[in-house]
Image (cartoon, rainbow, N blue to C red):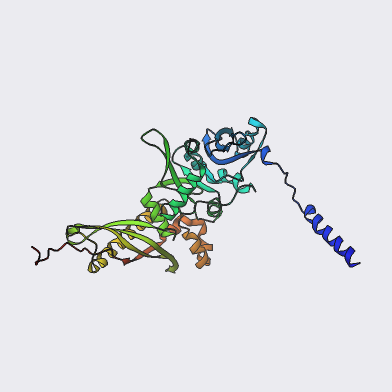
Length: 388
């Protein structure tokens, strides 16, 4: 009896997963058009999609090159309609499971991110870790630059990842952008990618700043320095190089590498109005110094350098907050979420008049900089008085 029960249990374990399968239609990869990157532009009122398709062309026994990619371009009144046009090429259904990048063109961003991202966010094949960036101009240019020989989506992915480590951009994944879009008042930002020509006219990509949004639509673009101000203010800056002048008549110069910055934001009400206290702590080391005597910084000069670095950080953050939050009313800093969390009654009463809340807000910024490694002090060659 136990033997029969064991056999029955084994059969049940084999058959049960078959009964629990979902309703999605299965398709083999050979029946799919595999898309590695997608660019979304506007052509009048239509969406123009430029897609980089993986297309192995190597014969049996040959190696497949990453440069073997095809550019497909379609157009439709919606993203879904434009994607469906791909099947007209070879009858295959599009597969986005291997897509690593979504590039949004400038005009598409002006129309609104939600209309662009809804299709990808609701597609179960698309990873929530899909990188989303904005092209300075046409997304098509970025996709075509990546279709050239020797260019791969891996290179663009590496550029973005290194940009995060070097303090040029924050967290540009589909998940992060959608979280901000679905927030009450917080707004998304996107890394800004520019297409430039090298000396041999080859197209290259570079990070040129940050795009900020209001009501989900492109509001402004920021320089690299202003983008760092956003990242400092949101505790997302991993690294930065700051060069300051110091000493008598500011004749000396030091470059400091900051590799450990922490930012804390606290909200309180004073006389019924929100006060934001932003505290930034940065640690780093002197990378390079330039002054007449040569060598490195001396211990006695550290305090002045630290104060100069702290002052430059504060000025950068203050300028960015003044421009983006106070003037343009773009809450890419997510400060509205702090108010909602720590002052819920005030938020409930004032959330519908967010612009007025911003105008009444007081922002205090304090910066503390600590340099752990001052650099090498100079050891000038000295002539031995006993030498002949």
